[in-house]
Length: 265
Image (cartoon, helix red, strand yellow):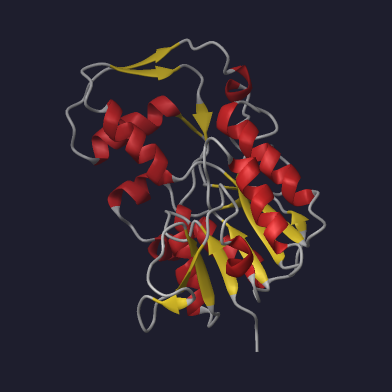
């Protein structure tokens, strides 16, 4: 019998898709939740995952949550305390020695500021943990880009950082890749994952306006200090690094075209 898999952040954009794919693969999944959802280690529905109560920020409940698991997929993220949360998770897992699978962000080492710096520190905690581990860095999800575009689309003139280039990716395709890694052997840092297109943020906004039927308006690049590494390509995989590329494009995502249909096209 295979051991359960614990997923942190299992109700988020990426985590819930990973949970679904793991269950489709026939694996028993345990989702870490800060708030109790009924009896500890009991499913919320006949076919749903088991929820285990534990707090990554304080470490409370984590020892019980990780008990008996063979793999931990760490999708939870906190802009203020990613490294400390990861450190608490690693400490709780030391006696179990599970395979620890982590999702990080492309460019954390080339633009180590703010949230990126926290994610880079969390990567270090995992690599130095003594546990078997796998880390996948992915670019920004389309959902994040869409949410930002939706807010900017309310303005009569839309300012965007000049030279801000990204290679966003479909979260479902990242979930599929992360599931493959979870069901495989630990392999340390694996090649980055990104979408099929490198795009300027201005073009992302223009495509969003057109796809959602918004009134056309000026999209004005504005010089922004401090983002030189981003203008130089820090937010997408470097050429020749063997990055895994998704198939679903930004226009496909906005049109609601399923990833499967994209692959078949």
